[in-house]
Image (cartoon, rainbow over all chains, first blue to last red; front, side, top):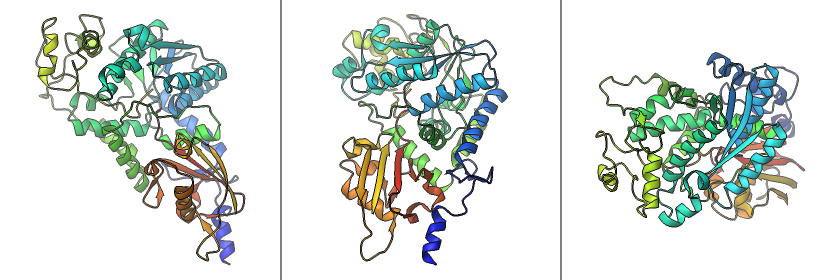
Amino acid sequence: MEVAEAKSKKAGPRQCSTCNERRAALKRPKTLEQICRECFYAVFEEEIHQVIVENQLFKPGERIAIGASGGKDSTVLAYVLSELNRRHNYGLDLFLLSVDEGITGYRDDSLETVKRNEIQYGLPLKVVSYKDLYGWTMDEIVKMIGLKNNCTFCGVFRRQALDRGAAMLKVDKLATGHNADDIAETVLLNILRGDIARLSRCTSITTGEDGPIPRCKPFKYTYEKEIVMYAYFKRLDYFSTECIYSPNAYRGFAREFIKDLERIRPRAILDIIKSGENFRISTSAKMPEQGTCERCGYISSQKWCKACVLLDGLNRGLPKLGIGRARGLNNGLEKDSKQTNGTKNIQSKQCGTLDF
Amino acid sequence: MQLTLEFGGGLELLCNSVKVHNVTVDPQDGEEKLTMKKLLSWVRTNLIKERPEMFMKGDSVRPGVLVLVNDCDWELSGQLDTILEEKDVIVFISTLHGG
């Protein structure tokens, strides 16, 4: 009797709730359905297709860069996008775009994964490096500034590096692998930081449409658990080592909190995104004005963009320039350029696991 | 009983970077069956060499670590109460590393 019960736990009646034929392989966090592998592949891909269609993420004939780190999200994104592009005739030219931050033992290894993806998925790869763009590798930056605030440099530089790489590829849009868990985490972080400007845009599926290269997040509603399960079942080749320089502190807490919530109620992730979408920002809230950097022409709410401020600090041997949100820290810049308004400096931000 | 344990998604770094472990684990304290709960505590004692908090929280895996028993999500087999059998393959994958 007991043995029979034990057996039923494992092999018993757990059939796929979709096809009612095969054995269920996972529980979907979004719906709590028990579903078999084949039905999971179908529904996972179809939901992403629906998100792409409903939100008009792409237009026929567009050139699209996929921000590729070699990690799980971007690897699955590259695989699924090339699959959907074929299946539904999107008519897209897809490219892989990677950033080489110059981190020995981390990015050099993950770039090897991206190079394999290039061959496996038949997508042309472009790699842009911090060394070429800024004259500094992250290894050199860390040597100079230590392990504090290094993620600020890396995050600011990466954002711009992806835009520059996208411009070199002459793509119309950049697709990134940010998933539902990432976005829920970012909503919470922006609330905790009181960052109204970011809170209002972090849930947008497409951003930067007024700029040269819009970005979109086809995985906005895709659970991390399903991305990892998909990669595991399909045996996709991805790289999963944490950045050797990432202290992962503040975002790490938000991340852990989200995962704890998910365990109690998996819907919480979608509900937090929904909450983020439904925030109405008071019209009297002061928002930073978008302009362009006087030095490099990149979008900036200040006279100089954040990357130029940081780079100037590095090159002058004053790496603390531009770190933190206190007004005084822009002092070093005042000789060269005046602050155009009283808005705060972009807050120092750790990258945690939101690395791509 | 003989089990195959697989660590992925960065968890292998906690056990000397070895991904696949063929191990023999037997039920203890006069119990007849081996549950996932018991296996987890065995893994923590015998395989995890560093930062056990990356693998476990309380008596379960840390939220964000996926577990599959014979390629089936353990959320379908009773999680900690899942009863293991000879030659089962248990896979642990962290979802917590970069994307």
